Length: 265
View (cartoon, one colour):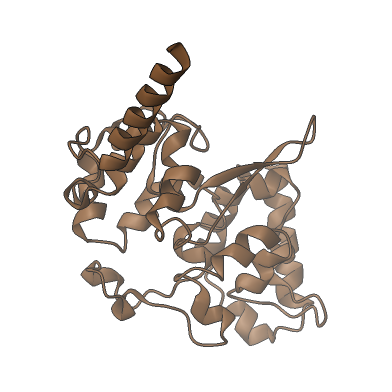
């Protein structure tokens, strides 16, 4: 209750003292404020003392900001936003254009999502900060191509569902984000932390990058390469072991056999 009171006080002050006209402040939906506050109370933002005014109040003018943009997120999540702006999802914002919408995409997209604008808020509920939702549900809210829809039938989806009781996915849970927004361990010693690469195109091309940065965290090199270069298996979202056998690995084995024979002569 104390945290809710603090949140409501911060929001009220930002509405009344932050340069927002009284009539406009009165028009704010109280039910939405209550709902957002309730979600915020148990979020990572609340635990880190990031309150309403942290995002909804302009730093220079103290004016109320109804819909904070990526610049607001960037003040704390600099690496996440910087990489987001380099991918297809965010590149238009980097270039000063309007946000990407599913209607602009070449891949099939959900009909209901055609006009949604791609920002941080598109995948993250900024009040709840539910990374489980952002890891898969947010993706499938827009994408309706064969590869995306087949995720639900994959072994990866089974692993993710088994881990769904956690506040955020563990290394054992494989979501859309696991492969397309890979995590990287940074730092050394006691100062090790995880950063998420929000550039959604980083691991797409060349495909070898997906193997190195993602697949081989769980699978061997041959299994990974045979999977990622099998177009039908990719479309099926890896619902079965690979049947492709790249000749490169046969050549490596033959080379090693010759080298072993030479060493034993």
